[in-house]
Image 1: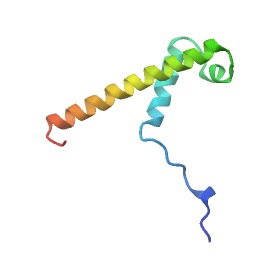
Image 2: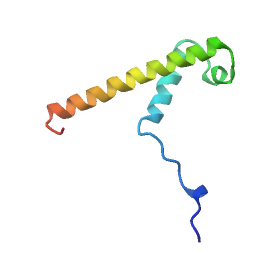
Image 3: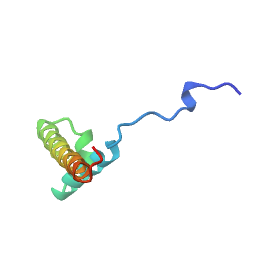
Length: 77
């Protein structure tokens, strides 16, 4: 049976799922619906999604910094 590209699982960034969860949590914390925001085309929705993305990026940076710090403490780095 020949192998085709449609049978492969797409490669995803290691923390992509966590990033999506952080964005969803930020949006839900504001009492909004993520799907609704993504389908809207107004500037307010776009601005809010940008803020949510910035929040997720900040949290991911914090998580990565803690990870590296712990590895440094334990002599793994």
